Length: 250
Image (cartoon, rainbow, N blue to C red):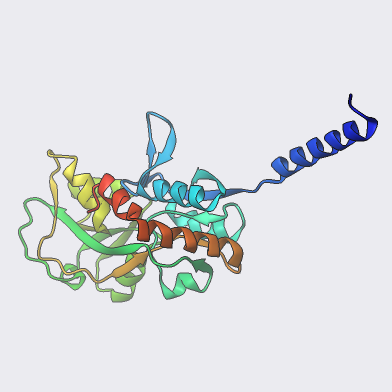
Protein backbone atom coordinates (compact mmCIF):
# COMPACT_ATOMS: atom_id res chain seq x y z
CA UNK A 1 0.00 0.00 0.00
CA UNK A 2 1.35 3.40 -0.95
CA UNK A 3 1.88 5.90 1.87
CA UNK A 4 1.39 9.64 1.50
CA UNK A 5 5.14 10.09 1.78
CA UNK A 6 5.77 7.58 -1.01
CA UNK A 7 3.25 9.25 -3.32
CA UNK A 8 4.72 12.71 -2.69
CA UNK A 9 8.21 11.36 -3.34
CA UNK A 10 7.10 9.85 -6.64
CA UNK A 11 5.48 13.11 -7.70
CA UNK A 12 8.61 15.09 -6.85
CA UNK A 13 10.82 12.63 -8.73
CA UNK A 14 8.52 12.82 -11.73
CA UNK A 15 8.55 16.62 -11.71
CA UNK A 16 12.33 16.67 -11.44
CA UNK A 17 12.52 14.35 -14.42
CA UNK A 18 10.25 16.58 -16.47
CA UNK A 19 12.28 19.67 -15.54
CA UNK A 20 15.54 17.96 -16.43
CA UNK A 21 14.17 16.93 -19.82
CA UNK A 22 12.85 20.42 -20.44
CA UNK A 23 16.20 21.93 -19.49
CA UNK A 24 18.20 19.73 -21.86
CA UNK A 25 20.22 21.97 -24.16
CA UNK A 26 19.78 21.61 -27.90
CA UNK A 27 22.67 23.22 -29.77
CA UNK A 28 21.79 25.02 -32.99
CA UNK A 29 24.24 24.10 -35.75
CA UNK A 30 24.64 26.33 -38.80
CA UNK A 31 25.41 24.61 -42.12
CA UNK A 32 25.22 25.91 -45.68
CA UNK A 33 22.88 24.54 -48.33
CA UNK A 34 25.27 24.86 -51.29
CA UNK A 35 28.49 23.05 -50.33
CA UNK A 36 27.90 19.53 -51.62
CA UNK A 37 29.35 17.09 -50.52
CA UNK A 38 30.15 18.89 -47.25
CA UNK A 39 26.78 20.52 -46.58
CA UNK A 40 23.77 20.75 -48.90
CA UNK A 41 19.99 20.71 -48.98
CA UNK A 42 18.64 17.26 -49.80
CA UNK A 43 15.56 18.08 -51.87
CA UNK A 44 14.06 14.65 -51.15
CA UNK A 45 14.04 15.15 -47.38
CA UNK A 46 14.20 18.98 -47.27
CA UNK A 47 16.97 18.61 -44.68
CA UNK A 48 20.63 19.59 -44.62
CA UNK A 49 22.91 16.66 -45.40
CA UNK A 50 26.56 16.05 -46.18
CA UNK A 51 29.89 15.08 -44.70
CA UNK A 52 29.99 17.90 -42.12
CA UNK A 53 26.43 17.08 -41.04
CA UNK A 54 27.35 13.43 -40.53
CA UNK A 55 30.44 14.56 -38.63
CA UNK A 56 28.41 16.82 -36.36
CA UNK A 57 25.84 14.13 -35.65
CA UNK A 58 28.59 11.60 -34.89
CA UNK A 59 30.24 14.01 -32.44
CA UNK A 60 26.87 14.75 -30.80
CA UNK A 61 26.20 11.05 -30.28
CA UNK A 62 29.68 10.49 -28.87
CA UNK A 63 29.44 13.46 -26.49
CA UNK A 64 25.82 12.90 -25.48
CA UNK A 65 24.56 16.26 -26.73
CA UNK A 66 21.58 17.23 -28.85
CA UNK A 67 21.95 19.23 -32.05
CA UNK A 68 19.58 20.91 -34.50
CA UNK A 69 21.07 21.43 -37.98
CA UNK A 70 19.87 24.72 -39.49
CA UNK A 71 20.45 26.23 -42.96
CA UNK A 72 22.61 29.36 -42.96
CA UNK A 73 24.15 31.13 -45.99
CA UNK A 74 27.95 30.91 -46.02
CA UNK A 75 28.50 34.65 -45.57
CA UNK A 76 26.08 34.66 -42.61
CA UNK A 77 27.71 31.80 -40.67
CA UNK A 78 30.11 33.82 -38.54
CA UNK A 79 27.68 36.74 -37.92
CA UNK A 80 25.05 34.17 -36.87
CA UNK A 81 27.53 32.58 -34.47
CA UNK A 82 28.54 35.93 -33.01
CA UNK A 83 24.92 37.02 -32.64
CA UNK A 84 23.85 33.83 -30.87
CA UNK A 85 21.52 32.67 -33.63
CA UNK A 86 23.55 29.45 -33.85
CA UNK A 87 25.84 27.74 -31.33
CA UNK A 88 28.10 25.76 -33.67
CA UNK A 89 29.34 26.35 -37.18
CA UNK A 90 29.72 23.11 -39.16
CA UNK A 91 30.52 23.66 -42.83
CA UNK A 92 33.48 23.79 -45.20
CA UNK A 93 35.01 26.70 -43.28
CA UNK A 94 38.76 26.91 -42.72
CA UNK A 95 40.76 28.41 -39.88
CA UNK A 96 42.24 31.83 -40.67
CA UNK A 97 43.91 34.38 -38.34
CA UNK A 98 41.15 36.92 -39.02
CA UNK A 99 38.35 34.46 -38.27
CA UNK A 100 40.17 33.14 -35.19
CA UNK A 101 40.02 36.63 -33.70
CA UNK A 102 36.21 36.63 -33.66
CA UNK A 103 35.24 32.95 -33.18
CA UNK A 104 36.84 29.97 -31.44
CA UNK A 105 37.79 27.11 -33.76
CA UNK A 106 38.01 23.46 -32.87
CA UNK A 107 41.13 21.44 -33.56
CA UNK A 108 41.68 20.95 -37.33
CA UNK A 109 39.64 18.22 -39.02
CA UNK A 110 41.18 17.91 -42.51
CA UNK A 111 43.12 20.03 -45.07
CA UNK A 112 41.43 22.14 -47.74
CA UNK A 113 42.62 24.03 -50.84
CA UNK A 114 41.33 26.34 -53.55
CA UNK A 115 41.02 25.55 -57.25
CA UNK A 116 40.05 27.40 -60.42
CA UNK A 117 37.69 26.49 -63.26
CA UNK A 118 37.68 27.84 -66.81
CA UNK A 119 35.73 27.01 -69.98
CA UNK A 120 36.73 23.64 -71.47
CA UNK A 121 38.05 25.32 -74.61
CA UNK A 122 40.49 27.48 -72.64
CA UNK A 123 43.75 25.53 -72.84
CA UNK A 124 45.99 28.13 -71.23
CA UNK A 125 48.31 26.54 -68.65
CA UNK A 126 47.49 28.86 -65.78
CA UNK A 127 49.84 28.48 -62.82
CA UNK A 128 48.67 31.06 -60.30
CA UNK A 129 45.82 33.47 -59.67
CA UNK A 130 48.03 36.30 -60.96
CA UNK A 131 47.81 34.74 -64.45
CA UNK A 132 44.23 35.99 -64.64
CA UNK A 133 45.27 39.64 -64.35
CA UNK A 134 43.06 41.94 -66.44
CA UNK A 135 40.23 39.38 -66.52
CA UNK A 136 36.86 39.28 -64.76
CA UNK A 137 36.84 36.46 -62.24
CA UNK A 138 34.35 35.09 -59.73
CA UNK A 139 34.62 33.90 -56.13
CA UNK A 140 32.29 33.12 -53.23
CA UNK A 141 31.79 36.12 -50.95
CA UNK A 142 33.01 35.97 -47.37
CA UNK A 143 35.71 33.39 -48.10
CA UNK A 144 39.46 33.38 -47.54
CA UNK A 145 39.73 33.01 -51.31
CA UNK A 146 38.02 36.37 -51.82
CA UNK A 147 40.31 38.05 -49.29
CA UNK A 148 43.40 36.74 -51.10
CA UNK A 149 42.21 37.72 -54.57
CA UNK A 150 41.20 41.19 -53.43
CA UNK A 151 44.61 41.71 -51.85
CA UNK A 152 46.38 40.37 -54.95
CA UNK A 153 44.52 42.78 -57.23
CA UNK A 154 45.17 43.36 -60.91
CA UNK A 155 41.88 41.88 -62.09
CA UNK A 156 39.38 43.72 -64.29
CA UNK A 157 36.68 42.81 -61.78
CA UNK A 158 36.09 40.37 -58.93
CA UNK A 159 32.47 39.28 -58.86
CA UNK A 160 31.18 37.70 -55.66
CA UNK A 161 28.63 34.92 -55.44
CA UNK A 162 26.50 33.24 -52.79
CA UNK A 163 27.04 29.73 -54.12
CA UNK A 164 29.66 27.75 -56.02
CA UNK A 165 26.93 26.57 -58.41
CA UNK A 166 26.39 30.20 -59.45
CA UNK A 167 30.11 30.67 -60.05
CA UNK A 168 30.26 27.59 -62.25
CA UNK A 169 27.16 28.71 -64.16
CA UNK A 170 28.67 32.10 -64.97
CA UNK A 171 31.90 30.53 -66.20
CA UNK A 172 29.81 28.30 -68.47
CA UNK A 173 27.88 31.32 -69.76
CA UNK A 174 31.05 33.32 -70.37
CA UNK A 175 30.14 36.04 -67.88
CA UNK A 176 33.42 35.53 -66.06
CA UNK A 177 36.74 34.16 -67.34
CA UNK A 178 37.38 31.94 -64.32
CA UNK A 179 35.91 30.90 -61.00
CA UNK A 180 37.86 30.37 -57.78
CA UNK A 181 36.32 28.11 -55.13
CA UNK A 182 36.74 25.05 -52.94
CA UNK A 183 38.62 22.31 -54.80
CA UNK A 184 36.77 19.34 -53.22
CA UNK A 185 33.34 20.84 -53.91
CA UNK A 186 34.03 21.80 -57.52
CA UNK A 187 35.67 18.45 -58.24
CA UNK A 188 32.66 16.67 -56.74
CA UNK A 189 30.18 18.72 -58.79
CA UNK A 190 32.08 18.12 -62.03
CA UNK A 191 32.31 14.39 -61.34
CA UNK A 192 28.50 14.29 -61.30
CA UNK A 193 28.06 16.27 -64.54
CA UNK A 194 29.50 14.73 -67.71
CA UNK A 195 27.89 17.47 -69.79
CA UNK A 196 29.73 20.29 -67.98
CA UNK A 197 31.42 22.79 -70.30
CA UNK A 198 33.91 23.91 -67.66
CA UNK A 199 36.97 22.20 -66.21
CA UNK A 200 39.41 22.42 -63.34
CA UNK A 201 42.78 23.84 -64.39
CA UNK A 202 45.22 20.94 -63.92
CA UNK A 203 48.33 23.17 -63.95
CA UNK A 204 47.01 25.55 -61.29
CA UNK A 205 48.92 25.77 -58.00
CA UNK A 206 46.64 26.59 -55.03
CA UNK A 207 47.41 29.77 -53.13
CA UNK A 208 45.51 28.54 -50.09
CA UNK A 209 46.04 25.43 -48.02
CA UNK A 210 43.90 25.57 -44.91
CA UNK A 211 42.30 23.34 -42.31
CA UNK A 212 38.55 22.84 -41.97
CA UNK A 213 37.27 23.05 -38.40
CA UNK A 214 34.10 23.53 -36.39
CA UNK A 215 33.63 26.82 -34.54
CA UNK A 216 31.76 28.23 -31.55
CA UNK A 217 31.14 31.71 -30.19
CA UNK A 218 34.22 33.33 -28.68
CA UNK A 219 34.69 32.20 -25.10
CA UNK A 220 32.41 29.14 -25.16
CA UNK A 221 35.14 26.89 -23.75
CA UNK A 222 32.78 24.20 -22.42
CA UNK A 223 31.16 23.50 -25.79
CA UNK A 224 34.49 23.75 -27.59
CA UNK A 225 36.01 21.13 -25.30
CA UNK A 226 33.17 18.71 -26.13
CA UNK A 227 33.66 19.24 -29.84
CA UNK A 228 37.42 18.72 -29.60
CA UNK A 229 36.99 15.54 -27.57
CA UNK A 230 34.55 14.24 -30.18
CA UNK A 231 36.86 15.07 -33.09
CA UNK A 232 39.80 13.33 -31.41
CA UNK A 233 37.75 10.17 -30.83
CA UNK A 234 36.43 10.14 -34.40
CA UNK A 235 39.95 10.50 -35.78
CA UNK A 236 41.37 7.78 -33.51
CA UNK A 237 38.57 5.32 -34.29
CA UNK A 238 38.82 5.69 -38.06
CA UNK A 239 35.28 7.08 -38.30
CA UNK A 240 36.53 10.32 -39.87
CA UNK A 241 38.15 8.41 -42.73
CA UNK A 242 34.93 6.46 -43.13
CA UNK A 243 32.88 9.63 -43.46
CA UNK A 244 35.33 11.07 -46.00
CA UNK A 245 35.13 7.89 -48.06
CA UNK A 246 31.31 7.87 -47.88
CA UNK A 247 31.20 11.35 -49.42
CA UNK A 248 33.90 10.76 -52.04
CA UNK A 249 36.56 12.85 -50.32
CA UNK A 250 39.26 10.17 -50.16
